[in-house]
Length: 79
Image (cartoon, rainbow, N blue to C red):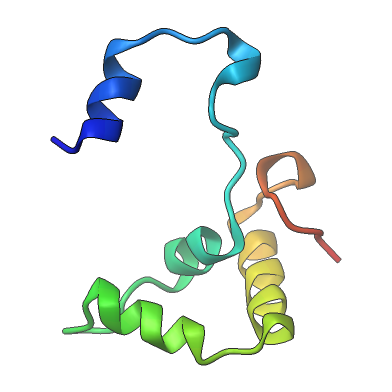
């Protein structure tokens, strides 16, 4: 287990100090689209890195809408 996970799992934090539960654009894109058959996490990362910021936001917003996510659940603006 990596040391950060171990630390987070073995220490308690007041609610306001916990990591945000909001999903980022890349997480929403990955959740909605998933990996293509045979694609690795690195391959997915490279594919997303090739997108412009506007393209990432557009994909994330569409994916969030289709997943039924609200503004309170994501850390990017929903159009």
